[in-house]
Amino acid sequence: MLKLQNIEKQRFDDYIKNHKTKSHFLQSLSWGELCKVKKNLTPYYLGLVDENNNIVAATLLLQKNLPMNLCYLYAPRGFVIDYNKKELLQTFTKKIVEFAKNKKAIFIKIDPDIIKRSTNYLGEEKQNDNFNKIFNNIKSCGFKHQGYTKNFETMQPRYTFRIDLNQSIEEIEEHFSKTTKQRISKSLKLDTEVTIGTKKDIKEFYHLMTLTESRKDFISYNEDYYETLYEIFNGNKNTKATLFLGKINITKTVNSLEKKLKSINNQISILPIDNLSKSAKAKLNDLTKQKDNTLKEIEKYKTYKKDYGNEITLSAHMIIEYGDKAWVLYAGNHNILSETYVNYNTYFEHIKYCKNKGIKIYDQFGTIGDLSKDNPLIGLHEFKKKFGGDHVEFIGEWDYITKPIMYFIFTKLVPIYRNIIKNKSKRKLKNELKK
Image: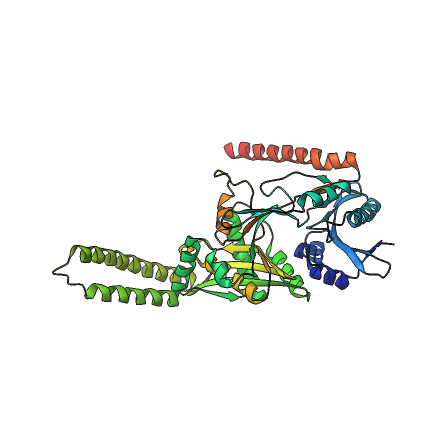
């Protein structure tokens, strides 16, 4: 007899972490506790246990309260179960539905970490042979598929890039685009460095996040959110949040450029200026341009030193580790010195870090499926694509509707009402500005 019960937190987290196929940080104890503290959601750590009290399936359910004492429940990247086992999935779903009805939930949402297909860096597509079976298994439980969205319309990204870290670091680097290799090389020649930060560096990380978000015209979280996330994920033995800080030391960079300038001058000095061949003249012109550009670079960095100090953090990334996977959850970059390509170097360093720690899957956490040139998000996609990972498409969201009328009101009518109010506010603001 299988029973659904609340599982002791650490036991739950150990089960999720060690699940062979469906371990995901969004199902972790740490994520549940963060959502409780910072997102005003109620987490439930539920497991289906057999007669010997062994867990055979589990899920983190997040409760979002709604007006009229109603709510909805969301299992991010859940359930943690073998979706090939139809009867087990149906039994688990039935138990979860009973739980949801007791909470007056109008629907249950899931978006399983199930790959529909993936495309590698060569453009070779690979289909999930079990996809149709799994799709029909979920459908048989009463869930309704919400469609194959192409951008970021869903709770979690339906597309991502993943790098298989079972490859050697040489193979991984070989799959980088040509420009990515060149930009990492240039960043290293400028003596940029990547260090691992601590809690005190959250302030700098947050500063770069705000700069990045302002460029993209949105603001997500405050500084306290990132600090709390860092504390919770590093306070749990199963999860880890690591800050990677890409920096430039102006003095070291200027010294490198001055060495380059000296080398250029030495090459110029050995040319027979009074009797130059055609090829020698071309070489002199090229060296002269290099010299002029290097002098301008040196002056530029000296100016930045006056304005920003000797050491500037240009890139800051937060990596989440859970089980044998890692996710690039957040990344912020400065508005200046993008030509140093510190961001590229930072990515490469935490790829190597994850590889050295024995991580198997490195997830860049979110991209798009609509690859049309006029998509404003295409730049994000192209950047992540340059690191040679597989473009992965997930199965998408599913809703189990327990209260059809209220579901229609909250998912269809309320969004329309909110858009009307939002548009009225915009028109009012424009009219006030005209006065």
